[in-house]
Amino acid sequence: MKLYHGSKSDIGSIERRQAGKADHIVVPETELQNAIYLTPDYGFALACGARPNGITTIDNENKTISFENSDRFDSNEKVFVYEIDADDISKENIKQIDELQFVVSNMESLPFENKFIHKAGDVQKYYELTNWKEKPKDTGMGFKIR
Image (cartoon, rainbow, N blue to C red):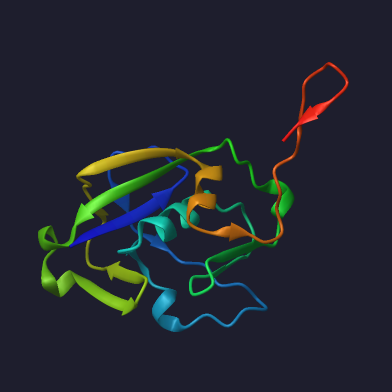
């Protein structure tokens, strides 16, 4: 099975990180591990990599995303999606925590098979951004293009 990791960073391998907790959001302890997070859903990986700082609410059932700091979302920012083959990870090191997330523990880093480069705005192929809209481009000729 292919798994994915989305990031704003162009990296040589995926390193484990301690997931953060927001003060006013209830986050299950299974999602707060010092681990490498992966997903079987390519669009979800892209969404995780594309999101701006702050709280991002992803409704995977309705395919919508809202950003706490929507003004910080840059649709032209580079986003990287890394592909891993789950069969290359020792069974004792990988655990599925929900339908969208796997964690890899007991490993400091994980090599990837493929790297895909996107613009953050490509996330709109998978999700509707509920509180962000592309700003019209000024043509310099007295009108704007959407």
